[in-house]
Picture (tube, one colour):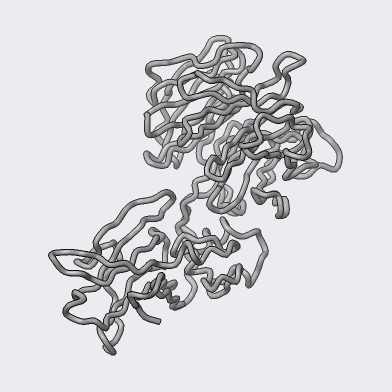
Length: 446
């Protein structure tokens, strides 16, 4: 398959040179183990559980990842502190001492503005400080909402939060307001205590944990305000849970993660004192990833991958077998799994139209060049994503895409996760040769 000006998409090709066994850790899930005073991590499927920091605190609560700086922020209700440390648990520093008579519960980072937001249930505050703890601003201060868990909608500049308990007529609410504290609304009522709130603004959904009902729930943002009891607008994604708490979304992979402190002892419940995940639409199985034997409290996802094995762990349920093989096409869209990995696609969603490279014209120095634009994943052990070119019937040659070097690489734009958008042109102008071809190849091997 070759390049042609009449084509909407450039051709994509996969060359499988042998599976890589590399499993170097990068990305995965992080959680606070309140019962053991730990911050821990594992691969997306729960494999490779490891301690990030022991002695993290006497009552560790909410945590947030800031991947730009490679840091973890978390709250310790035992010492009434907000801490910051590296992703490997090193170089811990105190961001803010919030005591006395405080209860720092959950944290979220706005890295663009350099702000840290946190909930203080005991003081009934939702506050904003600088990432170094400076310039504190109280955005919420009332016993009705008792902020406990929160999330940020950066695009819409909205803060969502759930209350701890509230007064009897307000138990289980979810609230929303602008970043500056104005425009406050009650958007969900009727929960049996809210634990964990997440917003997928691009997809148009609000997710939350209904603790004492043992449920992970969601509704469309366009249906707010709602009652959690409204079965026509509110979906129960996963139920039969003991004491579900913290919640996070991996939107690109379509997964929702939560933890369960498991302290109520309800018989027959699933995932007690463990870390779990499911599909964001509730269509998949409830996977119990890690059983702790102590109380987890919050969970976050680092969506980067460092190997094809880790990518499979992120996008597939455990035990899927051949469906996750590099040469398989799990969603039947004509793009095999290794190309889905290489080009930022989803292997279980037919998204070929979104991930395949696009043929474009590129003007440079008064000439026009055949060019191809696409998204590629970088930093994956054993995987190379290259653009190949040939002139007429000559052999295909690589254009030096490793490290985005070479004169034919026009533009590289970093994206979220470990993805980047690249534009690569042919070496010869169209005027010099009208029979040039370009294609994208993903190589997986040693």
